[in-house]
Image (cartoon, rainbow, N blue to C red; front, side, top):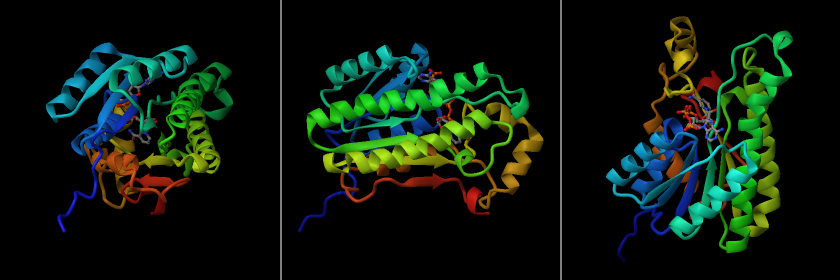
Length: 257
Ligand SMILES: NC(=O)c1ccc[n+]([C@@H]2O[C@H](COP(=O)([O-])OP(=O)(O)OC[C@H]3O[C@@H](n4cnc5c(N)ncnc54)[C@H](OP(=O)(O)O)[C@@H]3O)[C@@H](O)[C@H]2O)c1
């Protein structure tokens, strides 16, 4: 008997929101390396184009679309354009996110609160809903992933809106895993730990913060985005038929230490 590769995403198409850098690009690279195709959604055209070039260098098929995930019309249009360009959809990674400006709770304005929830919760809702509609219509199952955070587990005292949004995302994922199981659509969340990306640059450059978080991480370092390649490919993999409704934490042991 000839052995087949364990993971083969050839012919499969995944949307990665915020896939033009950081953890999203890491996961997109992993999917392409396993043979899959990628539609990247991000707000900045030049970053989108650079990410597509990077995925093509790895031998993959990729396209990008300028999209603000907090805008319903843009989400619907980007989904139409992605499916037109790549032919189908097998899953979506709701990875686009922003950080919160550090603030004491008593000083947090409604405007600041909403700005974070607009992207980190409404954006996840809109993109998952649009992907769900298309996956149900296609009728072949699929994989939905929402990128949460370890801030959904530990008390993020200075990033309250961020922690609240990331916690809500996990509730949304569990509800969808139940609701969509009959459609063979798996729904999971990914909780990354401290990772060196554009979003976390200010935190990483704060020497005291970097030292404290590094000491609290059993592997004693922050992650590189490339460490999310195999995580992305695993979550996309249609042969993972029994993995749904889970919070997958990839944090160097931060939350169990
Ligand atoms: N880095 C960490 O330590 C860490 C830890 C836990 C969780 N996370 C989560 O991981 C995810 C990825 O973040 P990252 O750390 O990889 O940071 P990143 O490199 O800055 O990536 C954030 C991505 O989101 C996109 N984005 C931001 N706002 C958007 C919007 N309104 N519409 C569409 N795209 C938008 C950005 O692209 P444009 O600028 O082109 O829009 C960018 O591609 C986020 O959800 C973040 O909360 C990160």
